Length: 144
Image 1 (cartoon, rainbow, N blue to C red):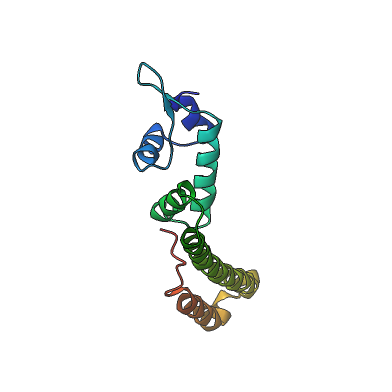
Image 2: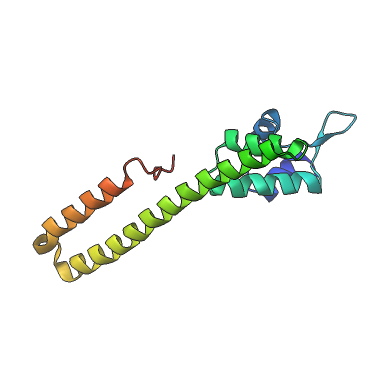
């Protein structure tokens, strides 16, 4: 599959695929004419990359995992991978807790404002927003 088809299949820009290739995250085959050819191996690489990004892994961390995967199995590689996964698990657990608080808060705010009751509940709502803000600080909940 050529780059445009591959990019369209995964709803990405061709430039994104080129960037991933430049970063060593994708390794498409090259034809004699220089065109990239994306095969099943590339699809699996890209699918893993997409999933890891959705889980909050940075491209640098994805590169780390690829580097570890390309090395011979060793205790050091295993420990490095386990540590990286442990860090991500902790970050995901914190996000889940934050989103559970957010879900509960939004449900409560919705009930507090239903029927035109915003003004009488304004102080309670502001307190809830402040609580959400305090719980979001320093927890990696900014999805930038």
